Image (cartoon, protein in one colour):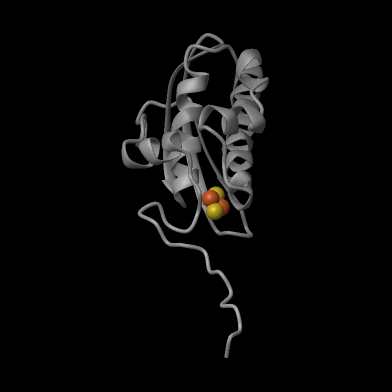
Length: 141
Ligand code: FES
């Protein structure tokens, strides 16, 4: 005996991870959740390592994103980053939205625990995919 007990991480009401207040707020009350019947583009992006997926639906007014909605099939950080992304891209042009980085998404949710940084990557990858699809559709016209 006398051996020091290994400190285990404490489980709090937020779980084992140190999520920011903003992540918790958006996890509890995400914005722009759902499907969009008249969307111009709908994409899904997934992360094979964690199995989480995000669906992003966009509607355009010329080259401006007039509406953005998301559906999360994932973790709290997936929900928070999906939610903030839809707010960040609204009323942005395609070019403006393309400049949004995963670091900016992470910053907007008040930072993410290291093991959850890929959730911001997933959200921005979904955005890239949606914008590419929108540009392809535009070129086909
Ligand atoms: S754990 Fe993979 S997107 Fe959050």
